[in-house]
Length: 89
Image 1 (tube, one colour):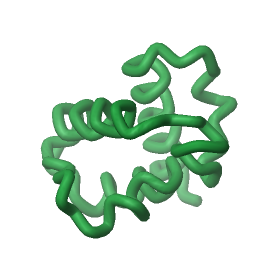
Image 2: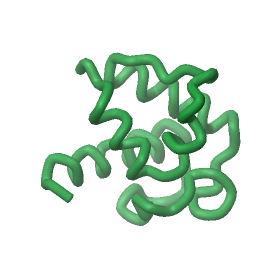
Image 3: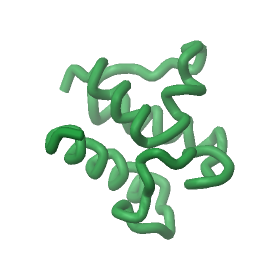
Image 4: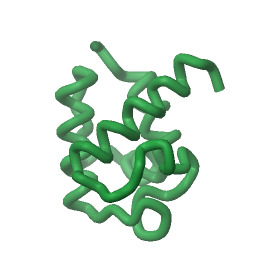
């Protein structure tokens, strides 16, 4: 993982923790752990909030009808990869 990728992982982890008011440190989020259920334990409402935060911060829309959403939100690493591929800011 490049330094730039790790910086974005850290940035998005902080965005999630702060935006959702989670009682976990961003540094404690395993980039490969599931965001849903086990792992971070987020639900569909949390994912919608993350999508809005990412859209606002990185300048592109995460659409609810995207067939890749299951993969995109499967882990922090996949979310960061998607941001890297689509960001405009």
